[in-house]
Length: 193
Image (cartoon, rainbow, N blue to C red; front, side, top):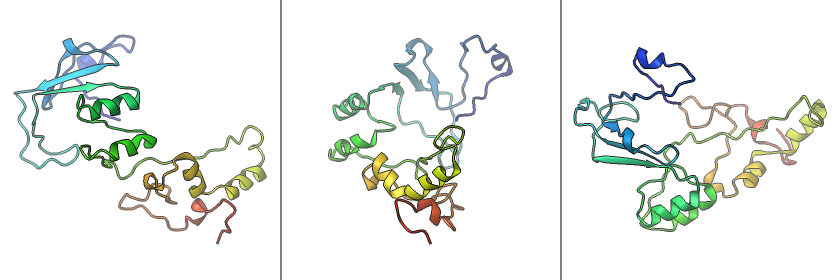
């Protein structure tokens, strides 16, 4: 979630009214006249921007501006976006549905990469207020029957696109740990140790 920081006079806008003045301090300026909600947002290079001397690192450091104009185009249909990318009509797709990844990976002119090693976590939460999961024994049996491997195979399918992980807060952070997480991965009829 981005931190929206704005002048107090703009922040005081009642929640029932739209904000109509956009103020920023970055390398691009928002072009309000070309904005089409749900379709396209346009930004142009801000000539008054002076990057910091620090090396760029994620959200920090100096930002070098290498293009004069950026168009953020919304394409809700992933197949349409893939076709536009392959035809050279757009330059980047931020997120591609996993079942469509092989189409892009088969095209040598297109580079695919993982931008966030943390990825997403899949969660299973049984509603303990309603049958059958209001019965603790049913919940225990469900947990014993299900394992990460089986769930990921059913949800994702291709093991190239998921990682089994028993850590509560993820396996990639510096302090991520799977210590004592055997029961998190077990299930599917496997004997727990």
